[in-house]
Length: 203
Image (cartoon, rainbow, N blue to C red):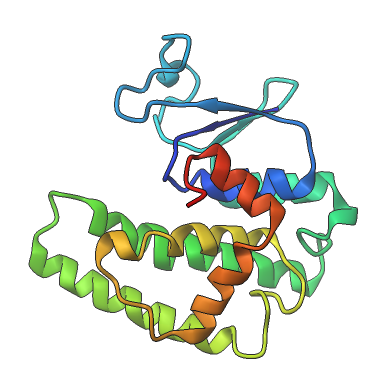
């Protein structure tokens, strides 16, 4: 397998999932500004949408959405318990979390805050909305180590990835003690540290 990624992007989430899974894969760095690969070839030839992450399977099939990629990775190593079994209610709760992080945090709030074309006044609205979502997450993490309880899941890698962007968009979540504890807990996981190291983000 190949994981196409760019440091600092949401591609960190599937990178964490792969490192946690123990599956063999080749990370391929994408210059997200020029859309060139290390060999000089055009990334658009592989991913017409131009964004990362992209997971290319050994048979040439490709997955390009985080929720799909991380669930695929989890299902390749069921003993790792990175996701509950398909068809179970806990699996649907995992999908709830993946969709929540993807829509309410990542695309719904963080993306506009990173967009230079969005006026500052509008960014204030998105920042307030984002903080309200984190306040809700704070309550959900009460008494839990991870989003699903005591067991780490691929949804945690996605939340960790998105939450790392808070400082960059000037969102103060320092008072959310459960969220802060979650981030710290994630930083003790070898798979997380391995992925951060690959992205040059370990510090």
